[in-house]
Image (cartoon, helix red, strand yellow):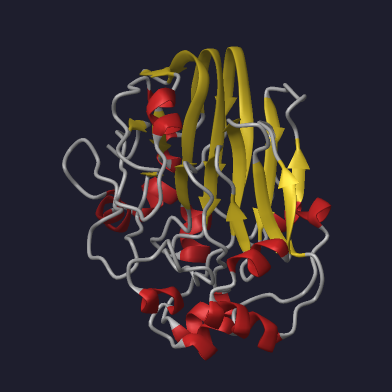
Amino acid sequence: MSNHPVALPANQPDQFYRGGAAIAALRGDPAARQGPEDWVASTTTLFGQDEAGLSRLPDGRWLRDAVRADPVAWLGDAHVAAFGPDTALLVKLLDAGQRLPVHCHPSDAFAAEHLACRHGKTEAWVVVGTSGPDPLVHIGFREDVPAPVIADWVSTQDSAAMLGALNAVSVKPGDTVFVPAGVPHAIGEGVFVVELQQPTDFSVTLEWRGFLADPDAWHLGLGGATALACVDRRAKHVEDLFTRTGSRAAPSVNLLRAKADPFFRADRLHVSGALTLEPSFAVLVVLEGEGVLDSLPLRRGSTVVVPHAAGGSALTGDLVAVRCRPPLPPNHGS
């Protein structure tokens, strides 16, 4: 099993917000609207859960357990040397059927100190579809914000102030947004993304009213003062966070800048004929067309996990796919 690419079915754990139509349409089953997030090749559980969120392989095993049992075959020697038997990656399809709340995620250092976890949650959004008249993402404060002001916004649940303090940017397919840990953000209604992130489910939900059933869930059980310490209160230049590649159609189009390499890597593959993929653990999401990966048939909506031991996989056909890979191990080329 760990020597060949594996097709994975939808894996849509319950969420608090609406969406899912774009995921169902991509997968070719518009009636199957099971939720706004599809966790692909997931070794991560929902916060506080034992199994919800994990991906199951066709042989019945959790992918998490299969990787732990044979990490070198799944991940390769260099990755295991750097990160252990840990994919260090979570990939999602995320279809925002409504605007998400303003929230942020802890850094590695914060997670290690307060959440007993080596990973925080830096993420990136590869925009693959939009709907509505003005699809937006809201990311990073437009100006520096003092800590007492943020605490007051959260205490009073001043949604207008929180959202208004963020940079609002229109997005279209081909845009990628890099979201460092700590940076407040909210994906707008009608934005459909392939999301790469560190493999945790840690969110500090600053805007919880109208979103979370339990008002105390916003701070991850840490208490408000501790949780707010993870917020990056500095102004952000949004163009530093965007990569726009919609007009590019090379065999492999890099979707992220080098600063993302310590967290994850992503490229868009344009195959017309044949393309050989270098050995790597990877997650493929097919956006258009059809083809074959080694002997595995692919079509629009296919989601596939590729173990490192698959070697130089041959991708043939006529298709477009997003390939997601784990962090670049230190002292190794891309």
